Image (cartoon, rainbow, N blue to C red; front, side, top):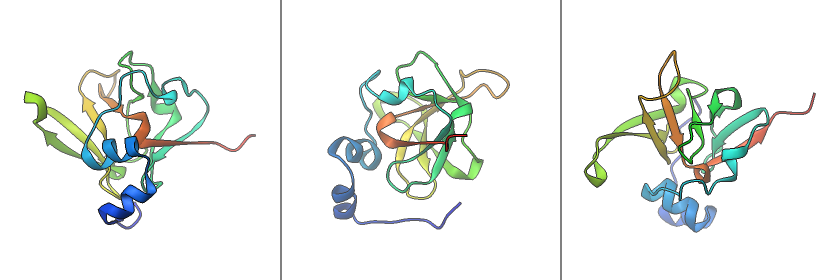
Length: 134
């Protein structure tokens, strides 16, 4: 994992769209089924929209029916961090980018086997980078 990245609030606001800022820096959630990444099926990597760190590979993506891009695992365990989230009177596990601490979404224990995890990510927090054509 690359060195930690920190920016001031003003720097994040200048870099990100208002929706990206709300989701990644203020722990917001995009509207379900609003991300074009839900339908993304090309080979490539889903990177952090804030810092560009690779987070999820396209072969880990699947249609969970949740309305958000979902993955079975990150590209590497060190790419993300998890934190307990007790907001809205729920107990959830928040997922953040390990490099810049951007809020990405949540992980749930209802994914496909063998791991059984569903990384339910906000599409606005991700930047898809397609693989080079072969």
